[in-house]
Length: 201
Image (cartoon, rainbow, N blue to C red; front, side, top):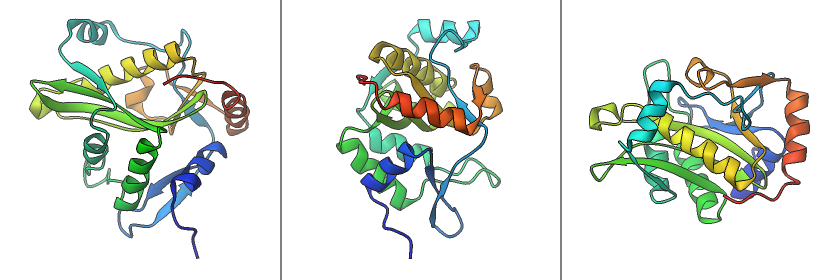
C-alpha cells in the first residue's frame, strides 16, 4: 500500500532526487527521476533574449512573491492540451499548499491591471530550488508573463545564495534560457552540496 502523501514525504523525495506527479487518468501520485537531469544555470549560463529583457525592463507586469500561491498552483494545474494533461492533482495541490504554509513552497507572480496573468512555483530547501510549473494567461494580457517570472526567480535565487535550480526534464521552452542537462549522478552530487548551503528566499 503506498505511503500517504505528506509534506515531509515530499521533502524527503526531493532530497533523494525524486519528484511527485499525478497520473491525470487515475489520480494516483507516483515518484519520478530522470537521467539526464535538467537544471537552470544560476551562473553566467542563464540566457535572456534581448526582446524578453526589454519586456522585463518595461515594467509591463507587477511582480509579486508569495501573495497568491494557491491561485498560481490552480492555474498551473490546468490541462494545456489533450496531449499535455495536468499532472498536479488535488492531493498534490493540498500538499504543496501545506509546504507553502511551512515556508518551503514559493510562488513568483506576474500581475497586470489587478489580475494574476502568469506565475511559477517551486520548493526551496536550503541552497536548492526545485522548479515545478509555470503558466501564463495571454488572453488576460499575460504574454511572456511566465518568462518574466523566471527571470525574476533566477535573480532572486542568485541574490539569496542558492546554488542549484532544478528543472527536472528538458524541454524546448526552457532551452532558450540556457538550460543544462547533467547526468543524474552529477545532479545528486550537486544536490548534496546544495543542502549544505544556507540560502535566503
